[in-house]
Image 1 (tube, rainbow, N blue to C red):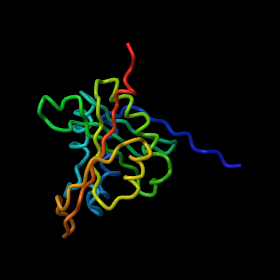
Image 2 (spheres, helix red, strand yellow):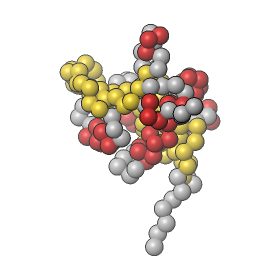
Image 3 (cartoon, rainbow, N blue to C red):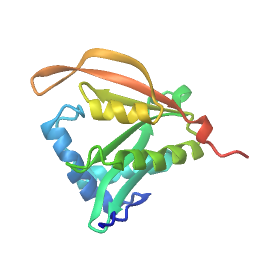
Image 4 (cartoon, helix red, strand yellow):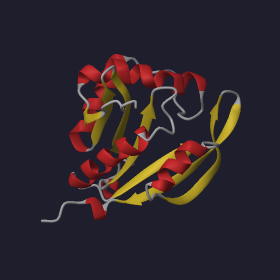
Length: 174
């Protein structure tokens, strides 16, 4: 009988920036999952982690070998009326999709966001992306629309799907 590796989810620190940048880089260079064109380095990733930690959250999942994925919530829109809505994302090492890691990361992230006063989580997914759509739907995100041909990357136009999740049920009761 083989044992499952122990996975730990914790708040990210600036020390995680290098590995988070390494996990993210192939998504930037090899896919249209993100519309960034140049992978951020460790210094930029550290700044993103710090910014997310101020008002939202950034967490990492690790096993005995180190960090294998991360998830975060960030500003959805900058106008004050949107301050209780956040945009969420999850990124895993290559080969870790459909292992339950994304579900576990969101399972830790979403309550943290609710505790910090977020009421709605929004996810934006480049299409096609059956794995991401499936993950978000399994977690209760509701499809709210598709924007057609809004992102140009790798010499092609890409659609994006939007989904949202009500976080109020996850908020602490006082």
